[in-house]
Length: 140
Image (cartoon, rainbow, N blue to C red; front, side):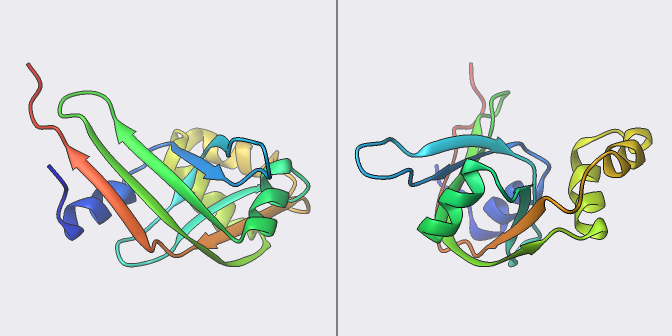
């Protein structure tokens, strides 16, 4: 059963690891990689990566991507979004801290942030245009 707009946005706002997919070129399947991200209902999806990575180069070339987040424990639920990249630029300390804080224990965030090289990180911002979602209800 598809999720309501509010339910799918709330689910995407939770700290799931996203599977990001971007076109990889003629004769190739899309590049699919896990990413940490940040999202607030009604807003843009933000994630960061090494600016020299294959992922960053393909995203810059394609200009759009899709992301999937899911929960495998009952109830199985997923949200998939597709949309254009509306901005990319150097990652700020605040962005790195906020995104890593969604995924790491509080006492590990500072060490992770200070061990990261902000000079190589780029933050991408994506506007969700197309959504797919489902909640399969209680299993069993």
